[in-house]
Length: 186
Image (cartoon, rainbow, N blue to C red; front, side, top):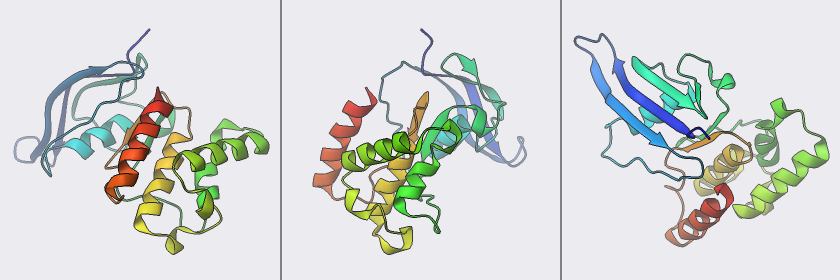
């Protein structure tokens, strides 16, 4: 069975290669299916750039990225089967939390009852059942973060990328959700 993620010799430059910023340098790693991996480092060291390259939101300057054994570094984001929760939440303001989460399943062409069941399950996991009918502008930063996380987790993607997924949450809730998400992903 292929690895969930294989990164080989990846570089990311912002600006000209000879005088721009070398944000990611010769990154190579392999992550197996079911593994949970954290990228740690100081601000500006390339963690978010790496996630954005894997998801397809940034171009790879050099090297290759494979997801589930398939080279994806030249494919657009929609062809990668990767779900990402951004640090900045990225919720659609005119949609309720329920609609934001369901939107992630739109391409799957599921029956409404299946979508509703998946939304309910993830909302329970993240303790946001009580805000499903509210809009992003009317909920706290921590609730927005959980809604964004829910939108990523609801997809049956080959890979889930979470950029600072719990930074806005209280330590107790963070610990509870970390355990639940770990169990959910495995």
